[in-house]
Length: 184
Image (cartoon, rainbow, N blue to C red; front, side):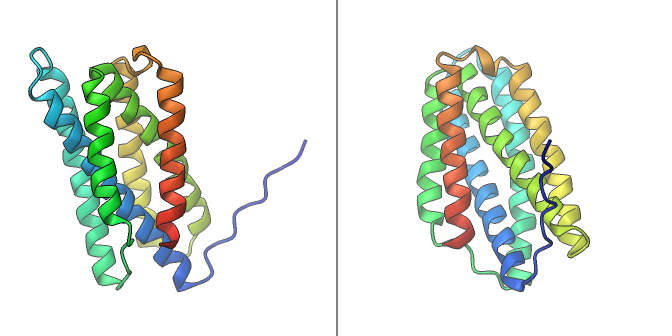
């Protein structure tokens, strides 16, 4: 039985800046996904409950984005240069999955939030005792993201047509976006 080595604490200012940059980009992307979903679902009769649920999650993501905006400014972190891409891609992903139906919109949320939960867990472990303020922020937001995922599952995400493929594709896209936003 092999054990995973404990992640090393970030050793440089650049490591912390990378965390803030990617988290800022991710929260921005989440806001745009929910905006895309709401743009479609608000026009759909019978989707009022989903609109209410997604609006609540979108408001929490907006709070997260404002917190990372403040961190970017306070710590003078360069935001990702890919923001224009995430602006379009996030909205398009949200709108496309919502156009497929409410269950597909929830499948999108469940997939994205699963990846973000894993991502935040890795950051929390890596931070250790290095940056208590950032660690507390990420820990709080991780709990919100896990709650969003559970809400999406409770609302029938797994009943979406092609759920496994849809979920796997969205997760892969999120992982690529994370790697790119850490650096670019």
